[in-house]
Length: 130
Ligand code: ZN
Ligand code: MN
Image (tube, rainbow, N blue to C red; front, side, top):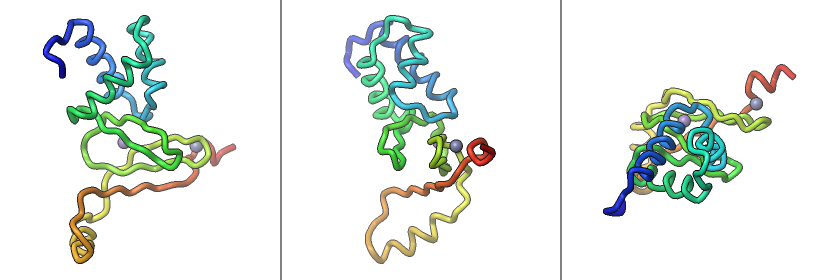
């Protein structure tokens, strides 16, 4: 973080953090931008990108990417999995249910594990009803 962080910078970052933390939708940068403009009408898309990057670097939010390759932002830092609807793209949180320790142990014969990701794909209830 630069030494001269203005009050405006701080406010912008706080608004962006709160938007991501309170969202369950795993918003993209552009979705965060649209929401942020309701509170900060003069904010630019570039500022939103920069602040999202900083918040990820700080570990305040996480960047997640699914099949469409688009960066999304997740304010839920506890370990969890995701269900992605192949029809509407909705991303829904799931609690971590697998014993990752056992998998990691199995993988240790191949190499050292640094990360783990499980993604369930399907059709969400709302899409299934159509
Ligand atoms: Zn859906
Ligand atoms: Mn999530």
